[in-house]
Length: 83
Image (spheres, helix red, strand yellow):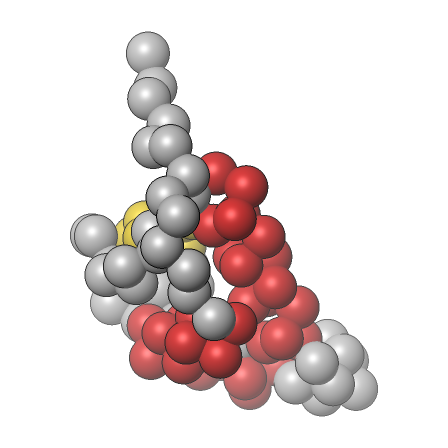
């Protein structure tokens, strides 16, 4: 049985989350995709997805394919990557 963490009331700004993702995502899967093929605001859309997950579920996940460490991680409003 999977347990979901309850949403927390600690707020994180979009800018804080974006910086966190930029530091933990592979560049080739984040800002390097801001182009005419993927869309000029690709990384912003990825960040918005995680921002929405945090506000809805209190947690979000990044796969090993996007993780700069190649492992995958989860995180919550504290913006600490748990690998």
